[in-house]
Length: 170
Image 1 (cartoon, rainbow, N blue to C red):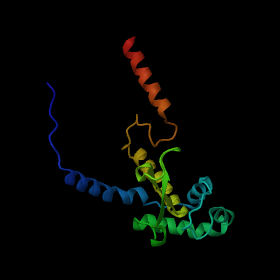
Image 2 (cartoon, one colour; image 1 turned 90 degrees about the horizontal axis):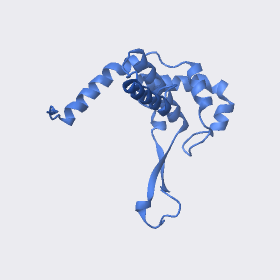
Image 3 (cartoon, rainbow, N blue to C red; image 1 turned 180 degrees about the vertical axis):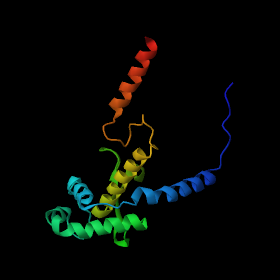
């Protein structure tokens, strides 16, 4: 006989999630980011630009040594305040056809595509890196989770399943 899972209130779950995030977010981002962190994130990003960017990304990368202190300060201020500057909170949304050959007159055949500013993508990448580091450091990330982890993939998951099946079979 299976045990029934008690019903839960989504509002309560949301309140708990917000409480947990506010409690741990300062621990996640308290160190800030270094020049090296920002430089690595920028140089590793694609050079695509958004029409909302004040300068094209390839020019930003070319003058990065001069701009790096200012961009690092902006990133650290965003982490401390928990939000992006107003200038980075905009996006350009364009409809894109889902598949070639679909009827272009039918609005159901389109999906929205958001183009974010380059700096907002960099801050997002920095936050993601800090969050994953924090989760691994505090052992809050399950050891067998493959998503969002370096050196883990679907291949790693498949190998684990195969190993477990072979171990049970022998």
